[in-house]
Amino acid sequence: MTKLHCLGTAGYHPSESRHTSCFFLDTPSILLDAGTSVFRLKSLLRSKSLSIFLSHTHLDHVMGLTFFWDLLAPHTPLETIHLYATEAKLKAVETHLFHPDLFPVIPPFEFHPLEELGARFQLGSTQCTWFPVEHPGGAIGFRLDMPGGSLGYVTDTTCETGAAYWKEVQGVDWLIHECNFTDAPQERQMAIHTGHSWTSAVLSAAKDHGVERLILTHLNPLVEDRDPIGLEASKRSLGTHVPDHIYLAEDGKSFDLSVR
Ligand SMILES: [Zn+2]
Ligand SMILES: [Zn+2]
Image (cartoon, rainbow, N blue to C red):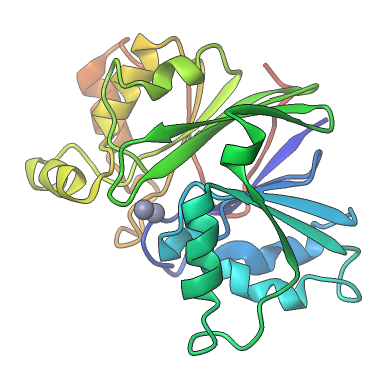
């Protein structure tokens, strides 16, 4: 059974109820992004090895890389940390995030530039695919085909039906997609300006591309509400043109990916 743990589900900055972007798959021990929520891994780590996949290196996705000294043995069973990202983003981590002016000593990451592995590669029994998405500075999404189910991870990005990344996540059992903003006109403007998505755009594009199980994340930290992205209103306006199963990611929530 593969369990998806939502460690951090906010975009931009932490709030009282949400830390920033990070998801953990306990089998096969993969971390998707490394936001401020990474400290929560401590109670979940069972394996000697962890593979971290970075969508990009904006701070809300990499801050937690600086927390790893407290997540390694003897604090946990963890001994080896593999870091997967594009070459440019690995360089940014090494030279900027871990510049001695910002952090004293870089934890022992093993760097794996994705370009050297190709667009599709095997990690144990998991087939991993990565692909570009639209976002200032560049970002990538991932598809993981695991024995227990398949998962797409798409953040941070603008969203529209027909965008190139949709064909990469075609047929996944579960899709995690960012949804930072509501449908309000000024929020759509902000989404376009900052390279993010709004609710009805994600719901209708996901439906157009046959997504059945959609998990919305990278939620606006300013709204401490059960529905920070106006999901119920967007669903009402779209009627049946939405995926069958829509979930709002919440810190501490987990999903059994074998349920499909
Ligand atoms: Zn972000
Ligand atoms: Zn970003």
